[in-house]
Length: 88
Image (cartoon, rainbow, N blue to C red; front, side):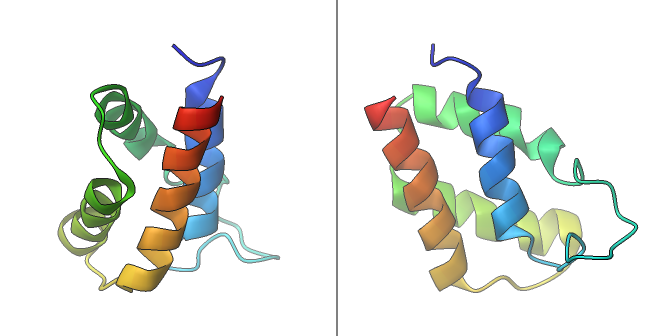
């Protein structure tokens, strides 16, 4: 297991921020998306690639948050997560 993988994945989720609640000056807690991190860590541990993670992020945006998230942004963040997992 990677050292503190939840911290890195949570950091990536803050960059993803599909509803823009973590913009500067926001009252929203920075932990808004942290509950999604454990499932993503499990996916990465099972060998999920960036495409699978991006699809998962888009599904979370649609089903859990109720917004449409651009695939480009999700894929960018998913690649960062996958790169971290492979290189850490």
